[in-house]
Length: 241
Length: 392
Image (cartoon, rainbow over all chains, first blue to last red; front, top):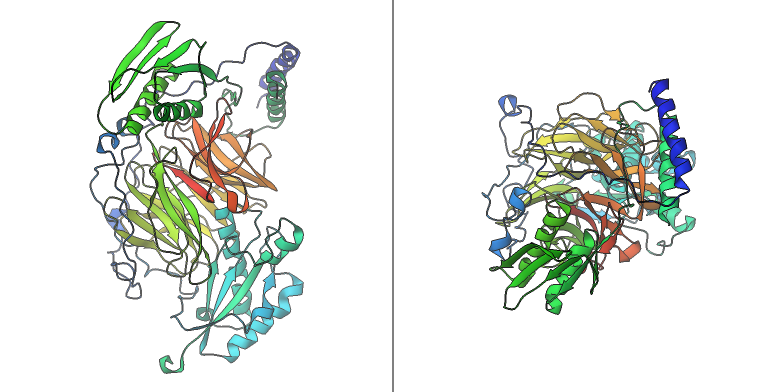
């Protein structure tokens, strides 16, 4: 900003501060726009070079099996479905069922979801890793626990591991969902560095949706107990080996 | 707070902002937030039910509903359908009847006409919202069950879009359509679903390893921004609504969250911790470097939402308490809306914000009229509701 412009603004502010001592009508309210939002520009052309969409054979949900229908929303009054001239017209549109997203092109280093097995939350319960506020770095005090988990998984090749990431209540919902994932991924990264096969480890973030029972107070004691990564072993039943 | 001290603190904000050189800010935008006065209007001749609906619709947009003695008067007539004669200083502005539909939609249509006539903007009385509701039950896994609910903006006519007895959250409307995207853990993992509300048909839109969440649909409905962690960090990706491999837009080794689109579809605004505490950034959906959006020194900025008129970005400041803020879309001094709450979503006419208020299991939805500062809770959302999304 130029000095001239800035000094001009200071002059305005100075005189406004002088005037502020007197009661008078509010400044003009910012004009609200009339009519609708500007027309959208066409998106970049993704279509020309996209690979053909192939349903992922591991993806049981995409064709409807296992997903189950959602509920239908029936506007009660069809006469008011198309109101506001297009700004909000939730009734009577063409039905478009989006195609599933192609999940075949993915980074192989982040493990596939393990097939369902016998879920064990107890064996590694004592190794729950705790984090500092708004942080996902693994503290020195927690290294030994991650090491113990690494040894266990390496010693049980039939088992897969799920690392669950959690947060305390002080972040907003989606921010905490990402932060919980960041924590789980930090643990996973360390496990891989300790020699655990990367395809053995999956992450799930719950954000702040799963506070520890009994630790739901608005205080440091509860908060510190909720900033955690938990370990769940998915052991394969012998017949599937 | 008196108007004088409020104005002084706004001037103080302006002075602080002027002292900090800010690239790309527009000094000509004047934000006179919460300094507008409510306007009295008298209602007469309506049944209690219709008056209740009209009164809510008018209060939400900054009218003060009085019994008498106002320059503006709205009078109903005899007959089963809602009618309205609006007079200003004794002069008739309009006189209309609203046949068809139910009483509720008639009353909303009248309220919208009053708003159009007096405030010269389209009304919001016939718009819809989607939100997350905790039902109070527990799933088989022991999670707190939350479902997606759609309703009128005033909380009436609520319909559960999901009844999976699982954890569904973060609904996002497809602009202009009766369709939603949302996140659900019904597979045990957080996946993004797309759900056509006219047929009930839905598909899993994204189920990559790791996190799939925070879907935001472009204004033309053709692209979906989302947070995926499949390459090892929660980053921002964009995919075609019709399918195909998504494109990675951010590659920070930290985390990104809660994207939103500019109304022209050219920019995505989102939260990132790439530079320390959570701040707002923008990126082009076509790719390129992410850029910090200045918020005048305010940090812990999350959950941005871009106003449909393109001018402002509302967001949550999460510094201990949650509170609502506005920043000009080009960046600059952020304005404290002095409203405790989180996760704002703009009305289609860019005047009202719906947001989540309260804490613990008592969170509910609330409406803030940005111009006057009037706050009105959405009835019927006290059963622990959050993450509202306003249909556009």
